Amino acid sequence: MRILNIGSLNLDHVYRVQRFVQPGETMAVREVTVGVGGKGLNQSIALARAGAAVSHGGLVGAGGELLRQTLEENGVDLQRLEETDVPQGHAIIQVSDEGENCILLYGGSNRALTAAQIGRAMDGFTRGDWLLLQNETNLTREIIEEACARGLQVAFNPSPFDEAVLAVDFDHVAWLLVNEVEAQQMTGSDDPFEAWDILHGRYPDLCAVITLGGAGAICFTPEGDVRQPAYPARAVDTTGAGDTFTGYFLASLLENRPLSECMQRAAMAASICVTRPGAAAAIPTLRETEAALRRVE
Image (tube, rainbow, N blue to C red):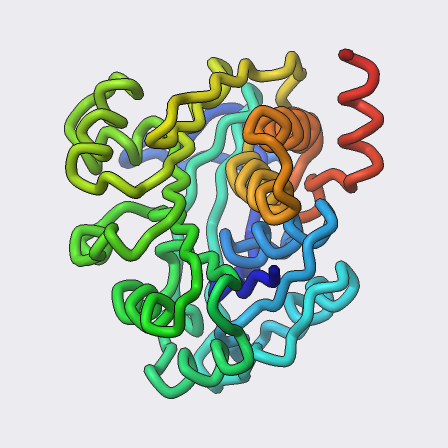
């Protein structure tokens, strides 16, 4: 099975700060860097580093040459990545001394997709292949509907949560991957088990993973749940941890590994990611992740 990720590409402008800036406040930053990111790019790189054969579809905008280069260097297939004159999407990220982050996102090229480009991206993928999608591009609902019409299995990470998510028919989604905030936004419940009961009642065939930060993650299927604690880590930057989890979980799922093993690999990769600054640059390799898992066996 192959996986196509129609996802966002961002230039990340990262500002290290003592704490997040408050309304009306001016604050000097300690350090600024420009790197590559975007949930789409991060998840494609995580999939590739976890051993999956991943193609990235979507648009790269003006000024986005570094993004294309980074994907190529990580072995991501770019035959379905098209170019646009729209300015490249980017993010403004504050990272505090505690390793927490807050993000301002400019969509730019990521929100310039057309229906024709979506169709071209999916050409050659057949029934049983996978589509991965986030909510940092436009045409979210249309992408999922096109994938369903072609028989692709859809994994959806509805982040950031907005009205576009509410327009999606989740009967067309095989796997939902959310954090605890997004689960609450979708269901109104801050309890992951109650949130799952609500989701399962609405969409009986849906499977879901709800990540819980330091409390780990839970994988829910109609047959039962798999609980995975977080592996201890000294966090310096949580940017990209959820994307790392998503990529490693799906790569393991595509290998038909048991769900418990999928969760272990994803949790360990995410725990390594938070110990490093940056987003894509912090994603560990499969060798690093497997070595770390052997050390805790």
